[in-house]
Length: 275
Image (cartoon, rainbow, N blue to C red; front, top):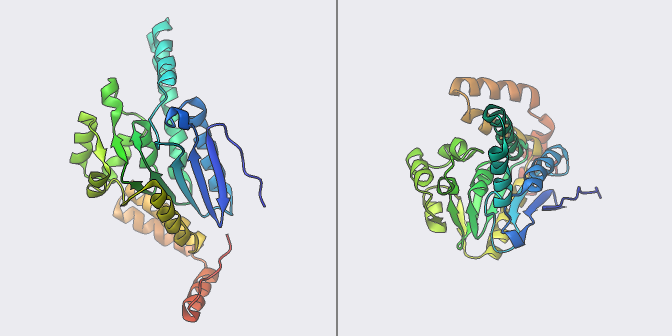
């Protein structure tokens, strides 16, 4: 048994190659305070490095997935602006804060293992930034989503406007970002924000864990390579992406895993792969 890291704002478990990361500020609707931002990056860096982890499920404790940035944290940053003697120097500092927050969440996308978001209740503001970093999103019927930043008088700056246009249509992103309106579970599925809606949070958990188990049963190296290619392809041309996957498989296609896969399929059983 490995020793799992412990966090102030996250709950982490690992069983059968599936890591479950739970936002753990239920009394605050999992609002994202400074420790939570920092610990998300620390946690997903650890998940990326730990060989026993093949897939990750990200969820929230309590009645809601995530209420976005903690307003006390937001007020603290704004207070620094009002006290700054030099606006230019504060602007430089504020830019660095935004880049750090972006990095905290980008660790989810950079994690080599697939990350499945299981969303219930409210997922607003920073919560949208967070789930946009995930590979897939699933929700329960009580889920509701909002790009809330416009209602606070700010431009969303931690990833939603950059990643969401690759998940749902650009026109829909613009509508949601300009209005801040709520999107409920059925519409979220219709526009492709989530892959599937489950009736209850309990059914959501069970269904997402079943999907995670299916992914965990595959060759970990092949799954990691697939994620690498999908993220790379999003940000590069088709020609560049084809060249990259050819180079990748020339060096990292595992003959051992291919043989195991073929033999297991011929025998009608599951293959067992090295981590």
